[in-house]
Length: 148
Image (cartoon, rainbow, N blue to C red; front, side, top):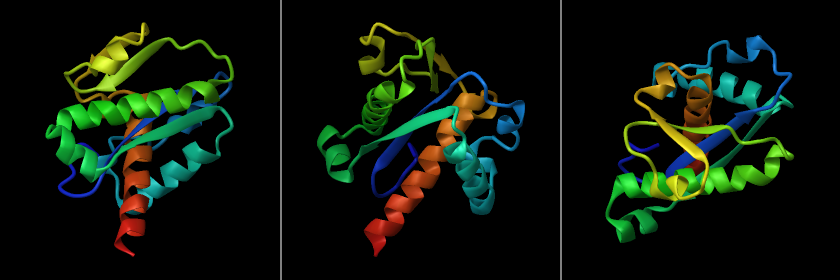
């Protein structure tokens, strides 16, 4: 959602607990390379898997205007997604936090966790691609709600 021209920025944080089958990764690609129908199918599969934990962070258009910086707003959404996900990990240890892109979100670097960026991570990393798909589907749903 960082390329949005209107509406909120949405980011997702995803963790997969042990026990998820390898088939979970099938079709999980960069959200921009999937059709809306394919994104929705992958989203449902991720949502319905007991080993997948995820949450989203939303930064409103009003907040984006206030900050006047889409990158900072995107980082804020990532932080909100991460802190929303933490309680849902059921005590699982957080390893590295992977961020798609070049820039490290300041809030995450101050968290004490290992944070790593991965350029074009949504094209090569399952967790980043899953987060990209979830964020895109959730943002689309939010935009539909705002439009009605």
